[in-house]
Length: 194
Image 1 (cartoon, rainbow, N blue to C red):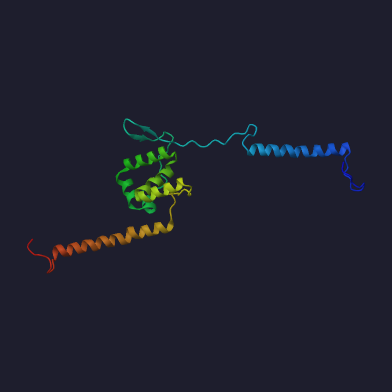
Image 2 (tube, helix red, strand yellow; image 1 turned 30 degrees about the horizontal axis):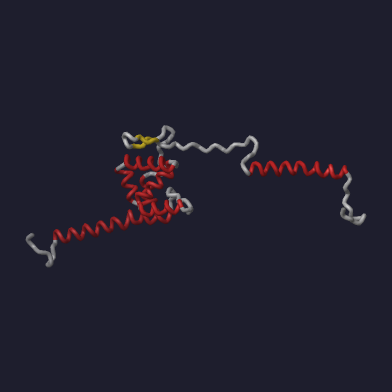
């Protein structure tokens, strides 16, 4: 037994001990319930249902993907948006080869188990630069953050518009003028009579 001086001896009467136990019991139950739910074995609690993606189906006979009836078939942005985000290649593919483009989006949705917006961005990025896209996917598998290819970078969009509306037509004009001069006005270095 520990010997305490009478003035500092704790009060150990049975009624005080019982009162302390009763006041700590709700706190103890709360702590156990919190720990149990945090560890995943709470009573009657279920995980929130994840929304079901409208994934396409694959037909091996025709080697084609078919969109789910729940899919709204709406792209997150149009062909011009694809050009502003990823350049001319996805723009031309979406404009002139729609079926191949749609099959690519459905194939990506099917294999990556993702929604149409993410698949569209990834197909556009792959059409623009397949090597960089593949490298980024490898980096994502190694723990790097996932890239949102549907996001429109304002600076990149402005640069794309300048190239599309200014520099490219100027370059085409210079090339056509140069060819026209050589065809219609051959200089002294061009062999005449051919």
